[in-house]
Length: 171
Image (cartoon, rainbow, N blue to C red; front, side, top):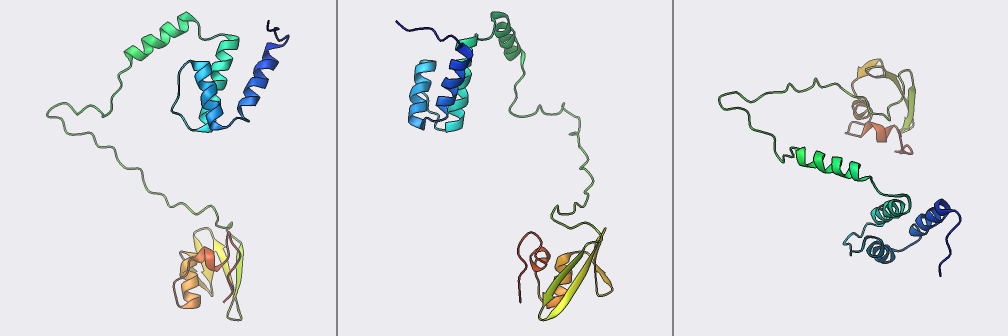
């Protein structure tokens, strides 16, 4: 004879915690025991969530019959379409204007007013970050890459050249 656990919510919490320690084959076997059918799911986290949901439903009660009936009604009334309806005949297709393109500054870009320093071939390179560009040697550039190209004479990724987000390179 099995004794009843004095604290069912504690037992449920233990059962769910035990799921997190199981392997995928063990979880598949537990799924079969709880749901009464085999599963082809191999995703560990999904199996844990499904079994935990079912254990809670069995321990605390499932949806009411009224809720199940209402869910079935909503599912029957839903117009599920794979493709949108074609426009009425003779009407031109509706055109949605494209949103205006806004230039987004990269998140790794320093705040305006910051001075970036890099030593290149023994010369200190200082670049001031402006709200809309970069100032180097009295000129304003659109990008750090343009500054790096001016300094080196060859194309560089500006973030890489000035060591933003990574260790700076040494040439």
